[in-house]
Length: 309
Image (cartoon, rainbow, N blue to C red; front, side, top):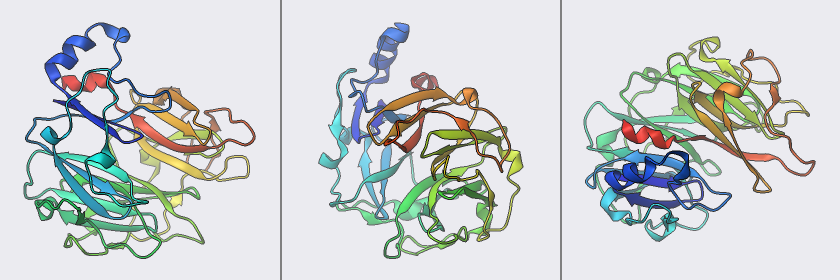
């Protein structure tokens, strides 16, 4: 099965054979009849026995088996996730992780808005409750912003809205129980908050996008590995021109990026078209904004060619 989940929270599955035969027509095929302002954010090839783990901003995790996602035609929009998960008001899905089995020596690493990081063995989540499980205990005002599946050996990068970033080994974070709070991943100044966590990839760059439409790529080699809990390094200068950081992604040249503005304008760009410059700089124009508009979100676009993997 190919499972697609859109930026606005619609899910569907379609058989891989159907998907491939329909996709062969080249650019003429659309994988999903999304609204103009929606796009596919997650795409997985999974069997009907795989699980999908949905993590929300409130620190909860919900689980569906792939076969529980309604099957739909190629151009169908899909079903709203809120119809399948018992999520509460003000709660929304931030990360989706496909899991074949809950094996040992595999971990979920989580990062919160207030700079807390937590690592828990994947098999602690091998249980299902319709109203979800606590994935992390959050302080009041804190939110879960990102989750990654790891083997316990990765280096993670936390990036903040005021333009700081810290890279450290997840070995600095001991594994804790499901309901634990976690430990400090980065020391934040003032009202700074974490906007994203990503895993370092060899030969990749860190792409930064600011609210006023500026951005850049910087080689990951420029971010030395530090100890967990420090202030990190300057990632981009957040000036009046730039505005604050709204998105940070680890990218390679063949990745594509979506940027979404408050007024619903979406632009899709290739990562390789973004200038590569040093950490302590302002960046270049990625999207021209009207005076009242600003970028609210960025996402790495999942290539539909990945279904060959």
